[in-house]
Image (tube, rainbow, N blue to C red):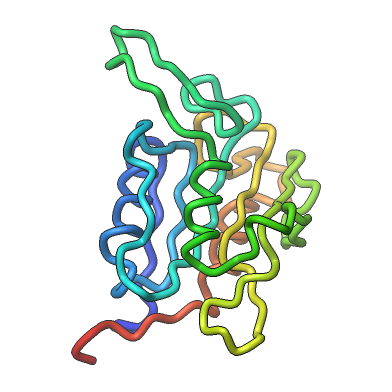
Length: 182
């Protein structure tokens, strides 16, 4: 096991847990990719250690359970919670990753799945965590025209079956974090 390449992803409540792990264990994780779920308001955390924590946040524009582009109030019978928007989470992680969140607007980030099911990614492209002038993309989100499901196309004639998973892997593959004690 390459301990410098430990990644976390999850969907729905697993996405909220993924964000929490990114905050609590950013000194051990290389990157995170929550899908279709944000933390409850009041729990929008920042990574606690002075280590970079890249995030790729995926959400569906047709998701009525946990829409990514707005603060959501769930009905009382569904625990009555207010969920954060993707943009609030990106801002926190962008601040931590030393992205220019105050002066720079989101930019389009190209991905291998652009256009598939209206897939598009945006984020901060000028993150300089180490202060060495090397600017990276360490806080981004991708949306697609799906609901509260994993971004995979199960139709038999699809050439883009794993369109969401391909983007996650491309985001993860170059990210590394040497955990303490290694």
